[in-house]
Image 1 (cartoon, helix red, strand yellow):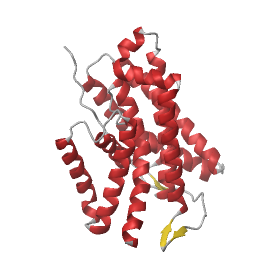
Image 2 (cartoon, helix red, strand yellow):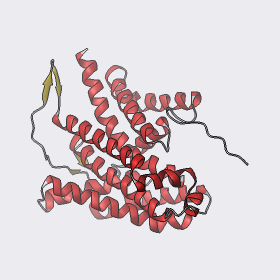
Image 3 (tube, helix red, strand yellow):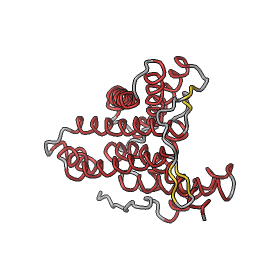
Length: 292
């Protein structure tokens, strides 16, 4: 039972990071129907920013975190304006290919600048682990869960109650009609990218605290799994991204503990296939009919 609870907590830890990253995918897709495959590489940018500011410049952890968030937001807005905005009226396949190209460009630029070798992420917290009924929980795990849940709750409240959030929801329904109703769709889309990239910057910092190694391709696997989490929960739905990330993290952790570490990805993808066969719109997705 102790092993099961420990693995459950570990799965919740990694799953909540997947959920935090998946929010960027689901928010962008909800408005512009774009799968931003470069989102995982925004995580890599945040991680390298944190390493440079912490190790080279000697900044404190909070300042390094703010720098990582700022640079991720800057890159996200720049990519949206230069690469995606001109293709809004083009077929979706054009935007998809562009997103893949941007991802490869960012990875190769990082490879040229920083090299292929991984860089260690410095330790920013030296807090002893917490113990509850024989279960040892690292402080990083507790911090990650608390911060991520708080951010998700704030984001949900922002989308539901704020004027900008209502504009996002209107644009997600039909951005052409929203534009006719006086909503500045370009500003709304830019804000959506900025929020998603800010969450990716925070997620990169939390991810590196748990897995302290930074490389040019480090964002590929977490980004892919976060995308799968968004699809699993129902892409375009914020609570669905949260649920999908938690389900994926727990399934991955329990598979590594009780079946095989080599089978963890296969089991996660198998769960995704089964869910999509039963409910193609994801766990929280709803079937919509379009009048023609």
